[in-house]
Image 1 (cartoon, rainbow, N blue to C red):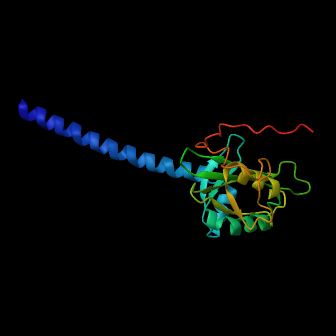
Image 2 (cartoon, rainbow, N blue to C red):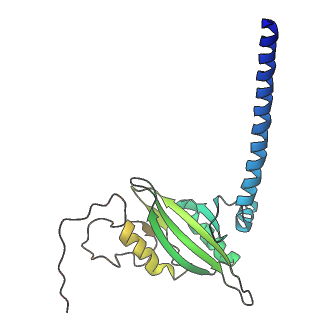
Image 3 (spheres, rainbow, N blue to C red):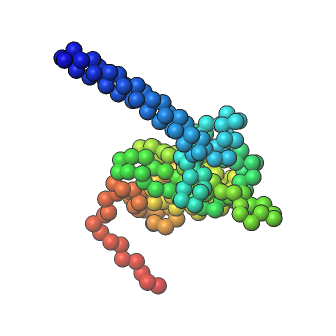
Length: 195
């Protein structure tokens, strides 16, 4: 009876191992399918041409989101412009986490005649907090001018080769970057003349 129980437990254990392996194989195939679902048309095109990026999936509106390294951003931006993304709808930046990375976000659109629903893409470029430097896309999309200046003013992201990178909202004498999560507000308020 004891031998039967041990063999029975052994076979249950073997069945358990086989089921776990089968389950893991199913998860791998499912994840591979999800990865393909996460990769949109532009991501597939970039992979086909050997351009380094990371697909972040789609947002709630179905717009493809990609992550590009700062050192690759300028060349990929030029390629995207040539590919047809001729309109920078918006650029913004945010602080990912206190003491963490800073992100610069670009919403690009392909404007074409006769197309009711233009193709859009969201590009995220992450930079380290200590020395946040990202190449400017001002020379590709002129609409990046004030938007990159605002990101510099509020978060301290330096946009290399921007022609007028200086504060746009805060006074030039302001110390610090007000939208960083670790920013400590000064304990004084400057009274400005109303006239």
